[in-house]
Length: 254
Image (cartoon, rainbow, N blue to C red; front, side, top):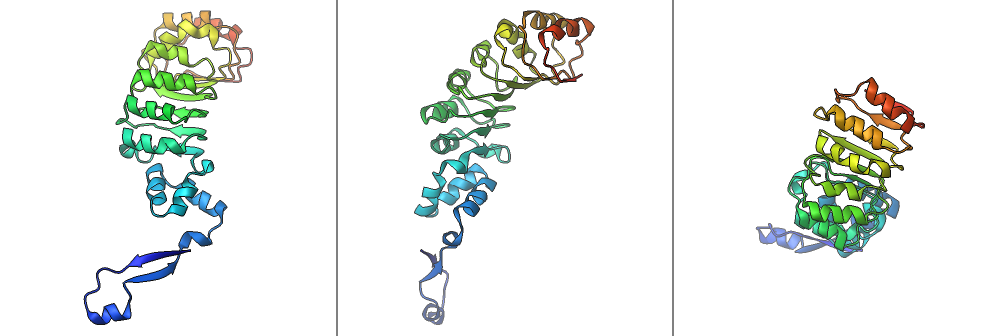
């Protein structure tokens, strides 16, 4: 395999005679095994993977390999996570298992529509903390991700009561500073029997009635990890209501 290095800044005739206009150089990636190349791809940000894949047909073909996108995170470059970026990348995410869109404030409904339209629905872990997006498209996408088990949200990423209808299959829910969401969870508390981890750290505005209603409505669950740090209204009455509903609880953070 060959690639060509263009030397377009040569000035003298001597230089042009000494160095031809195009020089054949070994293709660097041709000497790497697929395992090494895969590790390199996974170390890169999504936008860098895309730019690299556009440098030659072989890398573009390799970028379509599902394992390159099993874990995809925009955490290190949220400013590059736009609707157009998601639209392009989503065609590679059909086998993606972990998607991190935290702090991606520039995405809208179009981003989640692209993920849904391109079949990127095998996500098992989704981080939306601090992100933005159209609620209707987000809910449609969450409902389509039937393998989704781990979900991280806050009051910026989820602001609509219909969210409650999208999470029966989630086993790990992490939500911070989002008292409205917890109020909504009361309405479906009896359907969260599969929930194993619940983290409502920092939801300091949650009222005691909401907590008690949630504990009363909750059916017996499989919760093993419950984080209530920064929730000042937690008291003995709430814990007494909650305890019978969580026989498998192993970790409680207050």
